[in-house]
Image (tube, rainbow, N blue to C red; front, side, top):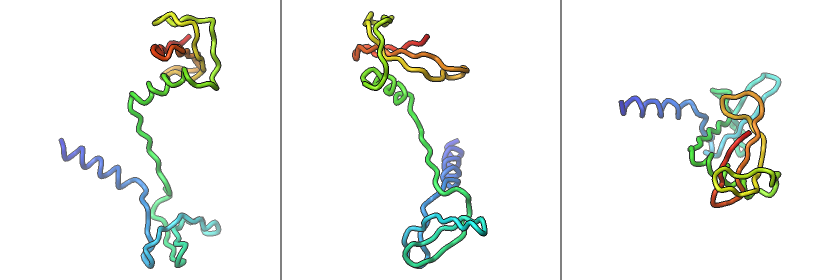
Length: 129
C-alpha cells in the first residue's frame, strides 16, 4: 500500500510542469510562442538556444486548502471593513446584535445564499438565510 501511495505521488509530480534550463549556458528557459508555426518553444534569453516544448503546459499552480484555512477566512470576515454590516439580526450563539453579511454559492446548491457572520470577535458564529 505504501508503494502505491508513493508511486501515485511520483506520477503526479512527473505530470506537472517543471523549470527548464538551457543546455548551452544553464540559464532558465522561458516559454515563447511561435505563432506562424503554432508552436510552443522554450527559449534562452542569454544564448538564443531554443527547444520545442514537449507539453502545452507552461505553468501549473495547484492550491490545496486545509479545512481550518476555510474556517479561518470566515472568522476574519467579521473584521473586514469593506463588507456590509447589519444590526437587524441577532446571533443565535451569543446574542450579539451586529453581523457582517455577504452572498455566495453554498456547496451542492444552486443560486446564491445570504451568509451572516457575528461581529463579536470571540464568537464569530456563522449562519445563513
